[in-house]
Image (cartoon, rainbow, N blue to C red; front, side, top):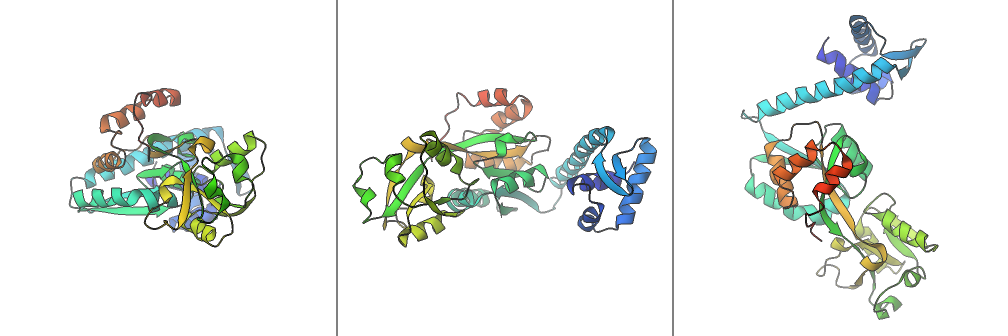
Length: 323
């Protein structure tokens, strides 16, 4: 059995059993992959795939279990290489996957502080949807994922609460809503709304609130970027609903802002690490700068807890900061 064969096996599974796509990703030939998989099956004495003629149609029961074990083996090989690199002069790096809101409004100060304390470490920041962010971490392409949605639902990840935040309504300063001391949902649904794309920045909380009271908001424009939302609010196309940390008094002083936590509640942004992966020492340092309540001891305690409910109970007595 060779590590190369296991990598081929995992890439085929990742590419939905398409050997041609796996060959492209692995920069090898389709015939070469097929030959190695056949050699692996012969050595193990079991079929890993169900086949229709020469086409792979599904993993066999044995194949599913072996794929799960192979993932663990490949992860451990990566951990060995990573650990060895910590004792060499090889460049050290940390890779972070996050959403636009986190990258634009929350992380700059954290990144600046981390790099000032660790000038010899390269930092790679990748942006994507919450789903993409979670998948990058699951596939070991990054060390950390930061988002509000999705992370806690992925079994392979350990999601840790970083901070809570709420939403604000922004309007032009001559808008009628500036005369309201405390906004209601009924006030908001009277006007066209510009807000986040579904699946971004806790959008589901807004949708749930309107649905609960059987209201139909007139959402005329959506974006992943709060700066885009502000731009169209300034053009008078509607009122904006944004994350409160996306409002900057110096830059956005021409807009009227009102917090609407009482309407949509709070959301919790999370930072996640891969459950079965060795954590680089300086990853703990980054996390503690980002969320000081997440100490190395607390993180390790959460990793060791296999039960999701038990993991949540670890943080019951921890004061989660409010952004």
